[in-house]
Image: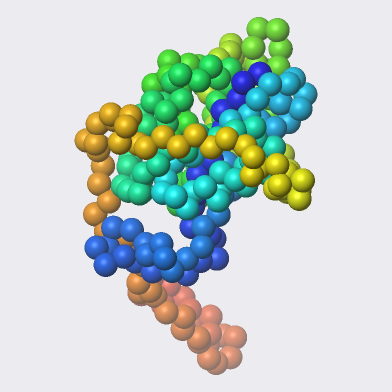
Amino acid sequence: MQIGVCVKQVPAKDAPLAIADNGQWIRETDIGFETNEPDAYALEEALRLKEKHGGEVVAISMGPERVKHTIKEALAKGADRAIHVLDDQFYRLDPLASARSLAAAIEKENFDLILTGLQSDDHGFGQTGVLLAELLGRPHATIIMQIEVIETGLKLKRELEAGWFQWVELPLPAVLTIQSGCNKPRYATLKGIMAAKKKEIAAVPRASLNIPDALTEEIVRIYVPQKTKKTEFIDGTPKEIAAKLVEKLRHEARVL
């Protein structure tokens, strides 16, 4: 089974973010980056399918040169090779432009299955995987918790609302978005890290894909929310505190 996995590099969760001078992105030189957590679950699911059914896992990522760190991490965990769509301004792309770029980069690949995480930790749109399926003309399913390979294709367990699940069947080739927590991502071993140095990373400049730059949305401004509320302590006896609290809830908060 030939499996492509989209892995995105995002700002580290504990990184103190500083806004760039133009107000449209962050100052990347001041922070660290890491693999998007939902994509780590997608990669793990792909590696397990490969171990059970054979084939090849290809990591696919888009971004500047620094993204190679995330790509090499995927290779160290067990991916066989990688495709790097080079673009220094990738953060400006909306989900449709991102999906078009990824589709153009992999259209010559003969993937039986393409996996993505449910959403990214930075923008969090949750649209790229679904749009990628539409552009490639493949059936897709979202919020996948379990994958079983059957004679007619795949049997999938989807997470629904309120603790409900749904089983669906899809033919191959297909595109799936994987829910976080469906497995336990592995760590890269020393052997895997050494092997990753010899694995192929095919660099594809996004400009060479001839993707239209017309965007359906624009980042106007990124800012840190300003605190407008404050904590107020009420002193007195329990009876006095209760009376004051009711008064504030009625006249200030207006919830009574």
